[in-house]
Image 1 (tube, rainbow, N blue to C red):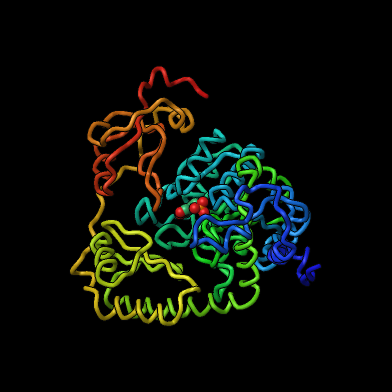
Image 2: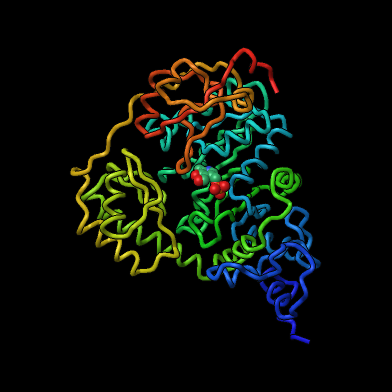
Amino acid sequence: MPELSENFKKNLTGFLENYQNFHTLRLHMPGHKGKSLIRSLAGAYAWDITEIHGADSLFEANGILKSAQQETARIYQTGATFWSAGGSTLCIQAMLAQMKAEHRTILAARTVHRAFLNSCVLLDLPVTWIFPRSGSLIGGYYDLSDFEKALQQTSQPACIYVTSPDYLGNLQDIAGLSRICRKYHARLIVDNAHGAHSAFLRENQHPIANGADFCCDSAHKTLPALTGGAFLHVRNSEDAGKIQSHMQMFGSTSPSYLIMQSLESCTDWLAGQGREAIRQCEEFAEQFKNQLSEKYELIGTDPMHLTIRVNGLEFSRILRENYQIECEYADKTCLVLLLSPMLTQQDFARLSAVLLDFCPSGEFIPAQNPPELSRFAEIVCDLRTAALSDWEMIAPEQAEGRICAAVQVPCPPAVPIVLSGERITKETIAFMRFYDLDRIAVMKNIETNHQKF
Ligand SMILES: Cc1ncc(COP(=O)(O)O)c(C=O)c1O
């Protein structure tokens, strides 16, 4: 008999190692039986299992997955943490389902990802929008007093929903928002998809440490986890009760064990050398941004986002074609480079040399300003009715006066320009063209579509 490893039953990786050592005949899903058809993934298939005896079950976790998630909660210092193999998208669905169950009205900062909007459609949640005072729809800064005013005008129990960091790396005042939420007995949800690293910075900047009730972190965005791996954090363990059942409502019954294994190893890494690696990356980013600021205008304060105010389309082409550097996101207003503690000193040296010594400075590839977009769109019908209506795709120029159906903005950055149910104006069309969007879904027939689902 093969020897049991020390980790057997204690963690997922140990369980999987033992499972392979026993050369078990796999008469269970998945159908690949541990064998890969693709050479490049030869090692991976053997680790890809399903909810077999001893492997626990993510949404009813009571064994190795329960203790592993408790370990993630411990290092993030949360009341409870749940793993997602469906990205932050699944976490957002579950957090909003919780708000629905608590009969709360949603007050959301407008720079949301489309995952938020789609969840509101699925759950039939109306939204009151708060607009940024500066910046753009993709990333901007809000005034706390706007949230407070919105809470004062709401008679129902409420929930504030903000994205921080946003796609450009702007951080909102989560501690300030949480104080306001306590004052009005409102919940605070933070989309921290871009900030999984924030608990391990020199100063803990994680939304839960700053008083948020719930938040989601896409571990895969800035930490060493496989794509799709995310955490849903709950500040108060008493609020954790129903979250797993909400995740189960939206998640696949076959969450990927490869992704879960990567979340476990990411957790172990954070408990060990990861913290130091994140701090080193933070330090480098600070120094580097100081040097870069003499040559470029930088946006945002999150250390992992290096956002430069230039014509990003042109800049990203130079980086790709001349230096084999691929960026996270680029448009005519900016370029986003996403850093990570997994970058080596050599990687940083290469990036420094390219940006500081070779690339043209900001004034040679200036950013363009997007056209004005009014914050007061005419709302013709509710989000859900519009998003689930019979729709057609047309060119923006043909859409003036029509009603936006399902939001189909590309990701990245997936921040909707016009919302489902809003009337499309000349301004919207100019804005869409500026961002090179050439199709929009509009409701086919407002009369026949107007019944509520
Ligand atoms: C701000 C924001 N929230 C949520 C999401 C969805 O995250 P995931 O891809 O992990 O589902 C994204 C994805 O890019 C995002 O940028």
